[in-house]
Image 1 (cartoon, rainbow, N blue to C red):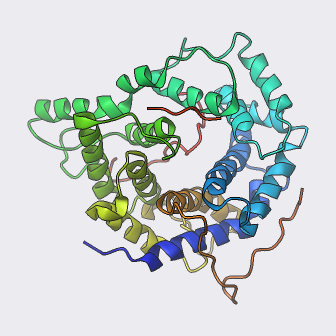
Image 2 (cartoon, rainbow, N blue to C red):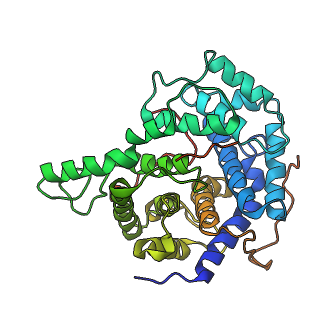
Length: 367
């Protein structure tokens, strides 16, 4: 098993943040080239907002890289078209408007996002017509945004959640399949759960713990069973170079109260990501099977690379609670960050062999 060194984590952190910083204009849906769908144009900006929200917890306001990214977000959030963009796709309109209100840059007026949300949910956010996982997602961002709702408490949601249910369901599947370990029971080399289940597991850990800020609420056997399933998924992700899921699973270990670098497959995942990182700092895709080619046009490369690069940066933030993050020296291959093209309270709470496009860190649509 490879031994992760501090330099691996430093390189991942500095490289991913530098690459994202050099492509800030691509996160502005009004400056970047048009994307195939409205929700795709909004998603990149929302994910950058999540990165900055968590970055500010770790680095405070002193990091100039964070300041430049926040300036781009402030320009986007001040654009009069943003509420329309966030709600253009009815399948994810409520989630996107809610995230827009929750993750708005400090000092930004969120009245338009809140008004759009009020039109979509005139009676307020309720538990009716949504799954327990969707209600967890909605509650997390509603609490962060201070939006009223009648969704059940986290303690009740936890008992119905994938973190508790999946390990028990997986044991039952394995028993019925005669001991085979894959999601379908027939292929021991397959992922232990399906793709949607794997991402619901990681995202649930994010929401219950507010990305590692509080305890997840799991303890005893439930915690041990969830940690073991995460370990199995990490092993599968590393063996098949599924970079995006590997980074999210390392984050999940943090959110469950574990030390990823103290576990063999947590270290292996960080090492896998370090090997996959390009000299320019990017992770070229969600997996080796879907990686962008070096000669790919810039816009297409960004579309394939930005999400996993951003998730890997998030992972390094959660692994580094200290207040300063490493920077990458400027050089011929790594230019210093340039200005963007267009300047502009959370309560305490107690995969298959060929990856397919998963859910993003932020909700893309109700499912």
